[in-house]
Image (cartoon, rainbow, N blue to C red; front, side, top):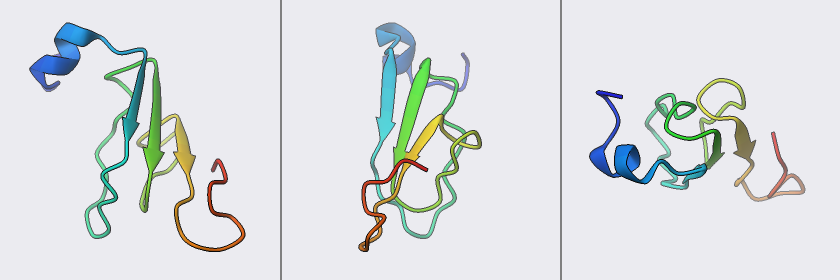
Length: 66
């Protein structure tokens, strides 16, 4: 818990959505601040940094759970 932002420690969210859309940065592991974490945008891997990843690139897979 030492690495978590204080707001996450106090709120203890059930779900965390990371939608920062950082194109050039590798997302950090987001699986521990909440029981369910969802990543929107490039670089997220379900089971890697988040529990669920959502495709945000234009095309027929837009919005698809990865």
